Image 1: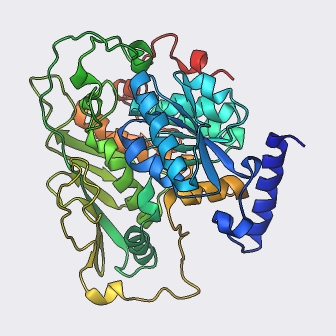
Image 2: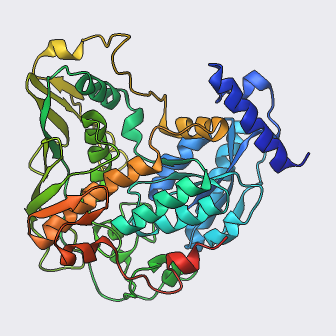
Length: 460
């Protein structure tokens, strides 16, 4: 029996164990030293800031998984990624670890039959196309949010994942944090009565950035990095730092994303939907206003206020003027939830961590309410990457499957389209089309530059 066959057998066996109530992610001390064929072999696609600071450290914690490959279009970052993986496992295993393969093109990594699953930590505009290619190559996927650059791409990806039968977890890790799970469970069980309104507070991005063209750094495949988006002169503020791993400029470029409305909005809208029980749909009306930079390179939205209405009558407002978090208003009170402060997008290593009250309510008794055995109990997870690895073994759906991630992302993109048009838009969440507004419908997709289109790049 070959390594791949053994891994498939072990995944099936692990699924049986999960169904019987046994844990499927276990430390090596339980089984002894695990053979390579018994582990989930992981490839990391994109090894920049979010990979080094979040995704790779999470995978390193679990002995049931092993990172065996890294891929990046920047040769320097690829090498630094290899060094990080090598040094981490050398220290963890107590002996030299030299099994990391380096790739500069994700198709080459996906062709490696020893790799079972991939963690995709690329810039936003590459998410959907790389993930679609990965599932078609037979890989399970952990995909950083947002799910896609456009609503059309998100639908394409969700369909591809569901057709493939692969496991895809969106990096909406708030679902695995206790305060967000608790808040949503309280809301779903009517502790604030019937939900009528939701407020979401998001941080913003500044204007600025230097548009002066610069030489493309040696070893960086800039054309492939631009991918399906239009050709634009290289400048470090358009892409990412060449020294260190500070927050990159591409996050502030509409060419590659929509700004904070999808950057953090994908997290907060997903949480709001979880509490509202609207995870598989979206709003039916959207409108609002936003300010956009009038100078400089960076062009994502600044100050904004957008609104939405859902089919059940619940309304949602999103703005930087609200506290960063999610607040549900019901007929009998409100609940507010936020992060603990250590994950601010603008925070730098060594910055003091603010102390915040992560879960609040109009009446403190709401927060100590006991969820009864016959009430709604939302799925729990000890950690988001752990939940993904568990589902890779059991073949169960993860806590943040692709369709849920797509719906959260598409809702954020609807708010962005409302910002751009300045019109009151009417949306059909089943058909995923605007009603009587072909100009807005034209914004559901973008032209794709050859050869980086879905048709040409998603080969297996």
